Amino acid sequence: MRILIISANREMNPDPVFPLGAAYIAQAAENAGHETHIFDACFREQPADDLQIFLKKNRYDLIGISLRNVDDVAFPQYTCYLPYYREIMQTVRKASNAPVVLGGSGFSIFPEIFMRELGAEYGITGDGERAFPGLIADIENRRAKKGICSGADIEITDSGFPLRRGFDIEKYYTFSGCINIQTKRGCALDCTYCTYPFLEGKKYRFRSPSDIADEILYWKERDISHFFFVDSTFNFPEKFGREIIREIINRKLDIKWTGYFVPKVEDDDFIRLLAESGCTSLDFGTDALHPETIRGYKKNFSVDDVFRAAELCHTHNIKFNHSLILGGPGETFETMETTISNAEKMKPVSVIAFLGVRVYPQTAMSSLLSAEIGIDPVFYISEHVKQNLLPWLAERLKRNYNWMIPGLKKGIDLRLFAKMRNKGYKGPLWEYL
Image (cartoon, rainbow, N blue to C red):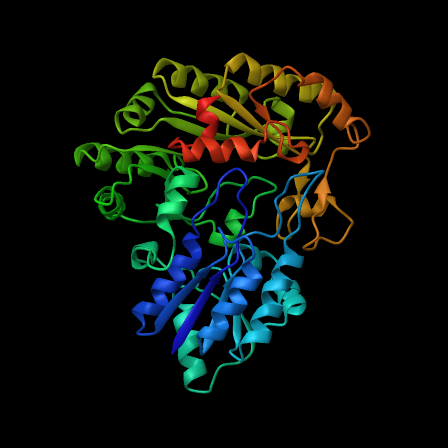
């Protein structure tokens, strides 16, 4: 069959993100013997118009649409992507008679709503590397049942490399400053708001370190040397993180890289190895720096753990960022002040703070809301701070120039970001603050 995969994501703040999920699915379809094409909306000014022209020139037997995000989680000035997804779907219907299958992490969180709102024939939740080729075979044999099917969790060692043909890799590398690589799927942590365990399962599924290094080498041979490991937490479990680091060092890959980290480090040796392997910065999923708030989010570390991790980063000249959530369960102005002052004491290069908790179904946070949780974002904000949260933060953080608050557009200058990328800046832009 002739297959088209549409990567619908266009979010560029703070950087465009290469669509790994769509690329893995496209590769799976190609491996199954199907002629597979890509339409990537990311860098297009008028994606719907371009898609209409594209579909008029090309006929397909099946069209897959990858819905990566539901919204940008940036309270209070948030953006919901459903209207844009409707426009893409309407364009497909006008220009093609092919059936449509929806997938992606955003779809997997709200599958029934997206199916109803967009009117697709098929939908796949979770991993699609096996489910999508299976669905194609069922369609070919006229035994496919319309509706939603669940993708079985695959062993990630079976997934191979994502498809690269059809994507503008040069643009992604220029404007994101890195190429993203996934080393494992799943998350065994219990953070109250997080969708990772729901989307990927609580059991870890690991790639082999040698396979990861082979993928890095593929990119190195194409003059790409900056990478972002996109796992939910690179250093949990730490043993697997060490195996990857040692593989990078032993094979002398000579790269620069970063990733998401739990702000808890067992010993100095781990940070030393990170630095030796080319790690330039750590993006800590800290969320809070008051003991009660940390417990409220069910994080697996203490305030002392975070101070220790920050100290080790300074010792080994590794930059770090704190990602925080202000206004969550039990938050008061006192606990927020503690979080902010502790963050300041640690002297991070930057802090990215989100206001309120975007609540998703099938998370512990969802039990705290009586309101219906749907695609239109619902945020939980503690009653203790709800009334004066925005003015209080504006005053408290007015001199914190290295703090970014996406929901208030504080520290967010997309034109400056684009200029820096055009000048060749690599890695996370917060490293340069």
